Length: 359
Image (cartoon, rainbow, N blue to C red; front, side):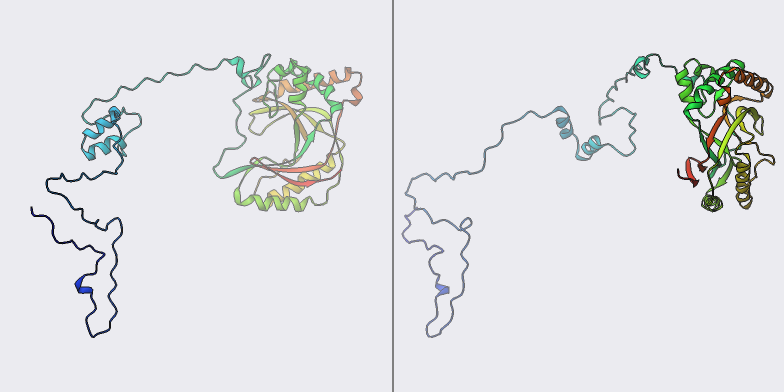
């Protein structure tokens, strides 16, 4: 090729079309200079027979080859849709079915091995007696369960004083020997088993809260709760403190003869006040269409119960208990006296304070 004789014009030199015409004043057009990265470089003059310069490559070198996992190679070998389905699965896949890969057999699923149960020594401390396994489990509801109804119970809470618990512990031991089928009320522990440990007998049986019922335990609907609680609170606004004396051992049987109770009855001190409160609860029950209390109420607290109608056994046991009390030296102090301080209305598992008298 003939040598380059003419000088190649670069972009920096003005072009002939951009020169100002003669005899006419005008503003030269603006020419945008290209970016340095895209601007063509100045031509390089080459001599004849010289090799072409090699353009330098500023790109980073490729990473060395890393072996791919087998499942990635297997997915790469599948078609695009099959690879996605094999990776994510479908909505209809069952967790219990073995995972499958397109074109292959299902992978074997390892059989789950059940862990052995923990030793009982870790769950129960030494010398532990599970009284709940001995408790009677065939109790029958006093009224049928209805969806949307809640059990209503209005009562006076009673806590046995500490100075009377020792005397009652001896009496309850005697009662358990006379009627072996007795169980602690609400706790549902066998009384004969509790009597083996005096501390447990005093704590489980006598350390809980008892109650004197002021009305029947009945079922009410949700919309009756607020009205009934409000009327009870209005009725019992002006209440005064009084003493209750539980001086007589007696037995009772519920209406359907499914359970019998060994109880302490109030026959003298506190009987007029409790009877008046029962009539006040009956008035509220009557306005809500609920059954009233018994015509001749006998206020009492129940300490033990037995399954079915065992009134004949309990009747004989109460006579023996009275003789046993008379044989105790301090029998004159054996009568249980408690102070009235509050009335409670329990609806389901929620407790409402109807009245509460401060100390």
